[in-house]
Length: 335
Image 1 (tube, rainbow, N blue to C red):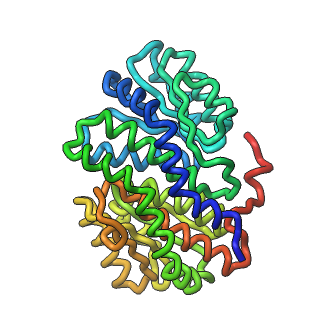
Image 2 (cartoon, rainbow, N blue to C red):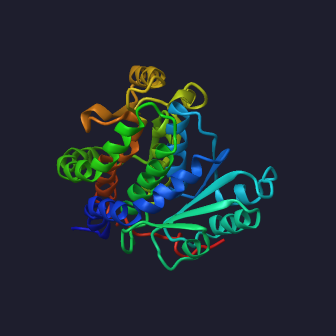
C-alpha cells in the first residue's frame, strides 16, 4: 500500500529544482542584506525550527556569523530586541500560519527588523506580511511529518546564509547544494530496501534515541519530534551526541535502540565514543554515516540523511498499521 507520504517524498527533487528556479534571485537579495547586519535571527516551530538548528550549527562550526535560533513565542517575548536594530529575522513555516511564528514576525515588523518568511503557502499571512517572502515550490503538502517542505526550506536557508558567510569553502558547498536534487533522486531509489528491512526489524520498539553533532542535531530533533513521534507514533528523544555522557549514559541499556549520525565532524570523535559505550552494554545501535550516501561537504549532512530516514519512518509506521502522514490531534489543536 502507498500512503500520501510516498508521493510527497518522490516530489522532493522537483520541489527543490522549482524552488531554486523561482526564488533564487530573492534569496540572493536576502544574502546581500545578511552581509550588512550584525545579527541574524532564525525562528520556527516543529520541522521548521529543526532546519534553523541545523543551519545555525553548520554556520557556527564554519563561520563568524552571529546567529540565534528561537521558537515562535520565545522570540515574541525576547526582551533583548531593540527598535531599529541592525538585524534580520528569517521566519520558517510550512503553512505560513503557525500562530506563534506569525506573532513573532509581526513583532519583528513593529521593531523595524527586516523580516523574511520562507513558507510553502503563497496566500498565507507570513508570505503577505514579511518584507521579503520566499515561497517554496512544493504545491500542497498533506503528510504531517514534512518531506518536500523540509528539504526546500533547509536548502533555502543554506543558500541564503552561506552565500553571505565567510566560510572558506562556501563556493564548493553552494555548488553541491545545486546538485542535491539529483542526489536525493538517486537516494530515493537506493535506500528504500535497506531501510524497509531495518524498519521491520525495529517495528516493535517503543522508544528511540536520536543523536548527532553539529547540524546533525537539528536533524535528530526533526527525526525524533516530527518523524518518530508524529509519523510513526513512537516515543523518541533527540540529543546532541556530545551530551551523551549526561543523562542518557545512565538510561541507555541493553536492547534499547539508539540512532547515531556520523559525518566525520571533529565533534564526531565524541559521537564515536558514545557509540562504543552503547555497543559495549548491548544497546541496539543504528549508525548512519554520510560517506555511505554522498560525497558532499559534511555541513550538508541533513539534506542527505533525511532520505534514508524517511524510508525508515515510512515503513516503521506501515509495519505498525499506521499511515505515516496521518494525525490524531495536531490538526484539531490550535494555540
